Image (cartoon, rainbow, N blue to C red; front, side):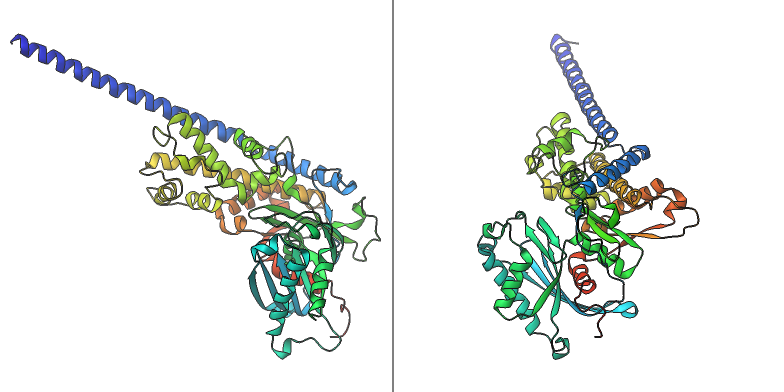
Length: 497
């Protein structure tokens, strides 16, 4: 072999060796990166752990905070607000009742026809109205006059048979989803606006009086029988359909819980004890906090960057507003530290709240062999193309960890409420059933979350006690529930119709 040929062979061999070394280095680098992905995932799963013993501690802590919140104002992270609802529906309510649901940039007016035990909710009609932006930052008169005129139009379109008999007023349940200091079943002063509203002259005013004033101006003869929030409305809806309903939980964008308490078990209650001996308490449980909650670095960062750092910690772990962003934060870390989506971090992955909980649910429920839904969501929302099935499986695993932690913690919270009212165990000789009414998009539409919550609660209670507790979906607490509370607090109760 000539010198040139030998030289060429040596060069070729060297090139092959170099190429092989590059491949080996690349494989080693990618296997090191993959090992980092797995390590981050494993650590996240461990930190999110909710073993049954930990959930029992969460339930115990919830019970302790509930007691403290009932003892004195400001005595607990849980506000334990007295709702002044001492008569939940019996199921016998009949007639026409109205609801006004104001909680955002739209409001609804509803007419609900109740037919008692035999017929239940016979019919409901509603109209949704958008609030012009200038009224959201204008005056109290401007907003409430606009709402009253929408109510007037709604009533004007009614056929004659819907008109009340002479001398009778129409009655309305008012769901007002802003912070209110309630002073009776039908009065409460606005503490502050949220959700883009900022009407300064309404702060500190009684919102029922403002609405009534606007209705009177234009001759709408309607009495606000109950001022409520959507969680208490959900409990009312649950009780109308099932007299064993004792609590309600909302799991949607946000979360809250309400339950029926013995009025004698409320030390901070100064008024006369209601005839029923019962009082519905609005726990505001989203603000629950405890050292037993499994917080990760991602939760701490989310909280620090939120509008309300240090507040609503329980809500930030279990509600629909936040689950998607926790998933995004974990994906961002593995993209930064392990080139999970390639050499550069996808810019969209740095955008807070770009990944919503409905997207997480869709990915979590993907049953296609190549996880096509996951691939499409990554491409459409985060602009990450050509992901492998291996990568998609990791994304599903993160969704799984976040959703199951949230569902199991929600079950721990429900255990705390059942414990507070002595329904967590079966007492000898007693055969009472308890129903917890649930509503909210997270509970209704995220089936893996719902199934996990139900099975965890069963596990926490044990077979015997679990037989006595049922979870039921109670729909539209802010609409139908408010109308039902107008019915159960009607000024005409006990009178011949």
